[in-house]
Image (cartoon, rainbow, N blue to C red; front, side, top):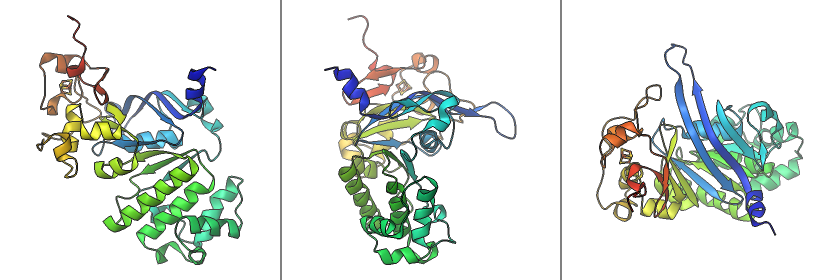
Length: 324
Ligand code: SF4
């Protein structure tokens, strides 16, 4: 048996060298929102995407869903290239999205059951009321909610509707962009448990975008840390968040009360603001804020990803000692 083929057939999403840049209306240099992102998500796994605001997390999510075309690199969904000229050849319904503000994603003029049914009908899926009632039940809402309107529901109930709509087409991948950050803490746990149940029952993969490392630790098998549109560290969530190797991940983890002691033992305050994506620093893009700065190599030479004890990190600290 060809093992390599079996492994690759489990790949739901494969990103290879994804870049995205755009010009602003004010002119000036192009903004590089993503710079050479390589990531893979296999069937049934959840990948957390973390980083400060402006790191490119949501842009990457939109590239994966096809809402945005990358300016470079390739996106493969279920083994098929779907970026560039093949952008329209996505497997219908294979990727769905859950947004941060669910109320805004539900048509306020339609009763809930029709708001769920309409995109299903357009996509060629069953949109009968009794099928929608089953989806509402699965999402922890009774069928009576189908006759209500978005303005009559709480934020958590709206997110359950959005989840029902996302799973209706039986997607292989759900991109969830900050799906609980707008909800009360008690409701967050309910929604996360619902998503976990869905994942376990259906083998759905997730790209889970969040600034909350505690939430990512609960939900995600793997994690990738973005900074200035570039992956700085990736690997299994537990390994990375309890034993972060990249200085940026260490600083992020140290700001999380639940991870502080396991990750670093002391709070690391990040100096200054992230650099502007239209004027990135030379060398390592993190060097201006790095508390472990090594010297000229950090300002002059962009580090590649190196293997570490927790996965891999883009940092010269982990360069193999070539004198050995
Ligand atoms: Fe810090 Fe240098 Fe590593 Fe960049 S390459 S994270 S500046 S030590």
